[in-house]
Length: 136
Length: 136
DNA sequence: TTACTTGCAAATCGTTTGCGATATA
DNA sequence: TATATCGCAAACGATTTGCAAGTAA
Image (cartoon, rainbow over all chains, first blue to last red; front, side):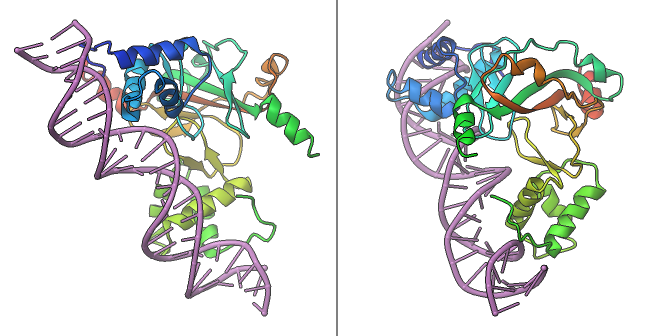
């Protein structure tokens, strides 16, 4: 879907954006839906999906496209990396500066026009690591 | 699914592994299914999925878990990165050495137990770049 | 007023799973 | 022979979409 010039700031769109900006978690579309429902009980899941799509195309939020599971969204539009728990799926920001020159390394040796990159760390969150350790 | 100790090398499993090893593309499960069918017309898509899962848990192949789309598989079990065409979805190996110390950077500043990372470059493949350029 | 957006429900699509039959070790 | 694996078809879950009604500008 292309973002239309005449994009309208509807109540639904505004509430979704505000909730994402307030919280620094990385929810799935369904989690966003659960957040919004107390405020707008008649909103549909389809509307949530459509608005998350539009907002990410506008650059207001980010769609987190790493790992082959469900999509996650991030109210922080700045470029940054994430770390994911391989056991429970928890997702947090990774404490690392964005590597802005990493792309130049491959530009000369690929036929692709390189335009960006995604980096995700995999591991065990504190809770899952503790649980795993206790079974050793 | 956990890999069983008594894993059997069935005809189906062997053919799938050999095809993945021979070719250096990065097929989806359905593409593998299309490859195998001429050789084994009665094989089912479910069998292909099950075998790709087992083979990747054995470390014989890799499941490529980047970007939120469909899963891809790689007959090369060595750690390496990929580059994806944002227009057509084409996926190739990225010409870059594996960054084996990148994880140590964040270990001290996260509560996670870091165990790996995934890096994917995004861009336009030569074909899509040419097409895009011609529209400017 | 106009056409973008919504709510609803059905459709889509990749993937997984239950089951009885088959074949590997 | 024992049981891992198969083929088949149905189920599943996340996401998308068609449509008539609603609403922002």
